[in-house]
Length: 497
Ligand code: ADP
Image (cartoon, rainbow, N blue to C red):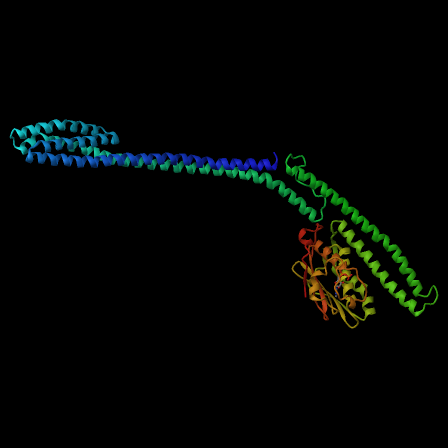
């Protein structure tokens, strides 16, 4: 299934799953709403009819009393009329409450007109109205009253029953919606996890691959099949093609630079050799002008030779993926060798060269001797290059928490503060070249930084124009033969003025 189809399916299922409880709750609430409306209408109608019935019965009682006093046909008609009105309200009450008591009430009221006629006839015949009322209408009215009471309480009961029903329906809807929501959320979570896993797994594999490429491993193993039918399968194919091409290109580049710089060395050495012979007068005496020109050619030739050598160093180091070959190394021996190597230069330049080693520095360290030699050589060469006669250059080592802190300090020209952050970039040269005794390539510090970081160490520079420069290396005593990590390739340079 393609990524797009998977995403669409996942989202659709999540939408449906969340919609179902919503619909269920909506249906339940709709039912509840109907119940409440019904309840309100019916009870309202019953209560209204009951109130009207009571009014009508009061009217019947009033007319009956009036009949006893006035004793005429008009009041008698009004009494019959009031009884009919009461019957009408009783009928409404029956339909609203659907109670058997209401039907009893109707029956009682149906008998009343006849009783009213009988009572009127007795009064007309001269009987005492009070005794007639007590014998005929009075008991009937009392029976009607007795019939009304259960209806009243039944209306009240019906209301509370319906309220209870509504409450339990609401309760049920709440429970159902909570359960449905929990199920929906659980399902949505499962789907979301499935979706995330199926996407994040391949993305992480690709990210690991990219990081490896960025760290210099141009053809890393990729934990993602090219056979997959989705977009990740196509990405895996593209990634493998890209990394293969990158590796080939890198190999070609390294080979080219290596061959070119190597091939340059021989003609440069031949040129420098002949120059030396000419300067020594092997081909006849030289005029002052010729000597001057030869000196310039020699200086340029040496610069070219250094550049070729540095280019070779860089390409060899990078072609090896920045790998180092750490072996046990006696620190004192390294320092003695450096002191010997730079002693002549120091004497020639009239620069004092001090080499010191503080107590506590480990006898033996585990570094790549050739590479560290190269770093120290570059730093010391720079120090002598930028320090005039009468100045001093100092090489020192001190212990520092399972690391060795090496400083190369000079009292030379210094580096302008705004240029300090760039000095470790390839081919960068600060504008203090006027103070340099020889031309450089701008590659020495870049190589030094790469080598130090391959040793999991740091290099930083502090400098003050006119006062001097100090390079400080911090190298762990023991280094494994690990590849450089991304952290060691960051362009952020630890350079302060
Ligand atoms: P280069 O071959 O030009 O010396 P590097 O990479 O070794 O190249 O140094 C880069 C630049 O840093 C130099 O050109 C110089 O401007 C500055 N620099 C390095 N070391 C020193 C130093 N000890 N004193 C003054 N400037 C220095």
